[in-house]
Length: 312
Image (tube, rainbow, N blue to C red; front, side, top):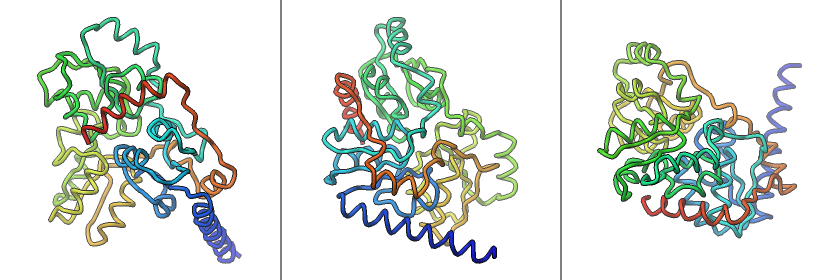
């Protein structure tokens, strides 16, 4: 009976995937999927990447409909960059706790405290916060953005760990908002030490959203797409990965003869994992859930995002 039940589940998943593929064709839709999504969502992606990859693809999309398998700020970003497109977020409740640590009023108050500072905002933020910023950045280009912007003081929101990492590469004064990614914050020094002891030949790849003591141990500090690229090009055969565990599925799929391990217990973003195949199918079938970013927030946020893309 259990074997029959398993076959039934597989048949349902296959049917759902076929429905998604059919609806994509019928509606001229593009499926953008973040590296932290569930394996079965990654496997049906038209574009699989990090926030910078997906932002650029959204801006250049020829398709009429964008289905964004990620969290809310990502779908908002796609809508801001492609306002003429229909942008769908399959799960309305897929938020980002770090993005929600700051709102526009809080940032405006911060700007009053530091009137000479420029605001650099991590793309992991709400549209309203982007609209109050001079330029956005991603983990891949944050250092370059801060180095190049014409200001001696930088208000960096919302991630204190990424701000700390960027501070290593500039003499400018960085004033961080005290937000953080709860997933990357869970990486512990003792866990990483034990992982290195268990896999002494593995290179440690660390996301800059991790705490500074984890960054200090890294062989490479990289965005998720940076990890994908480095793992592919490196002659090393084993890697410890300090980021959300969803990326490891992609790394293993694209490098079947290399080994990938979490740098300690696997860390999971519950919001990223909310999206299921049937949510994607429902989004396409019923045009749910549509993103809408009102003016003038959208146009002001767009300026900050387009400034970010100029650094890509």
